[in-house]
Image (cartoon, rainbow, N blue to C red; front, side, top):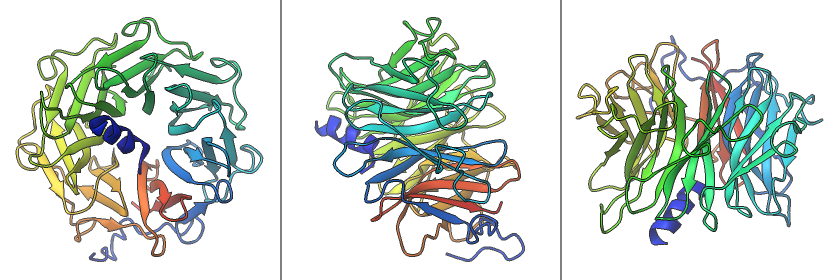
Length: 408
C-alpha cells in the first residue's frame, strides 16, 4: 500500500490500438530497445519508485525507497542515461542509497537545481519528520547543505510528519509539502533557503500548516505559479463533525505563506464526489491560471479544474468535475500542446480541454502501459523537451523501479 494512503487510512480509522499515423504513446525504441527499463535497486529488497526529474541533457533521475534485507531502508536514487542504460558516473553504478536516520526513510520527490545538484525530499519514520538530502552531480552528498547534506524538519513534536512533494521557486528556494500530525492532521508546507535552512520570511519560521477539516488533511503535491504563489493539493479527511467522505483539497498561499484570500474566499477550496471518497494526488497549472487537480473518486480516476479564483470551471467535465473508467490518477502534466497527460496504475491517458479522454491519443479511454503481464503502479511523469513522455513507477510483485519512455 502506498505510504501516503496507509498514513491517511490509519489516521481516519486511527483498448483500442493507437492510430498508426500518430503512434501516440508507443514505446520509444531508442530507450533500451523496447522503451522500458526495470531496475532491481537492491537484490531481494522491497522497493518503490515515486519521483522523477529529467535533466536538460536527457538523463533521467528516479527517487524512491529501497530496503536491504534486514534493514528498514532509505532514500534510493537511480540515474539513467538518455538511452536507458544506468549512468555509472552517478554513485559508481547509477544507484545511490542514503540512510537519513536509523529507521525507514522514503524519498517521495526529487528536484534539480540550476547548478545540477539534486534534492530528494521525503520523510523519516524514526524522527517523524520531513527529510531532505542534497546530492552533487556525481551522487555524493553535498555536505554544505543542512547537516552534512541532510535536513530534518518537524512540525509537531511527538506526532508524525512527512513530506510527499517538492517544487523549486525561480529564486532557488525549495518548497516541500506533506502532512503534519496532531489535531487530526494538517497540510504542512515548509520553504528552504539554498543552504537548506528554513526561510524565516515564510509563515512562522519557514513553516505553514493548513487545516481543512477536523479529520486527517494531507498534502500530496505542490506547485509554484507565475506570480510566485504556492498551490498545494491533497486530501481533506472526513469526520463526524464535517463530512462522511474524504475530498479534494486545494490551498493557495501568497509568497509569504499567508493564505491567498482571492482564491475561494480564504485560500481554501474543497470538492467532493458524493457518495464516493475522493482525494487529489497531483495538480498542474494551465496558462490562463486555471488549476487542474487529479486523483481518485471511489474506484475511478478523477479530475477537477478550478478557475483562477478557485471556482469550478463549468467548461470542464460536469460542473468542473470529471471521472474516468480507469483507476486513480497519480500525476498530471501539460504536454507541448497544452493538453493534460495523466498517469496511474497501468495507465497513461490524455485529456482534451474539456476534461474528456482525448480520442486522438487513445480511443479506449486510457493507454495501457505494458511491462509484460506485470502490474505497473505509475507514480510520476515528465515531458521531455522533444515531447517524449517519461513515466516512472513500481512493478507489482517484484517491487522494482520501472521506467518507460513513450513517443509524443
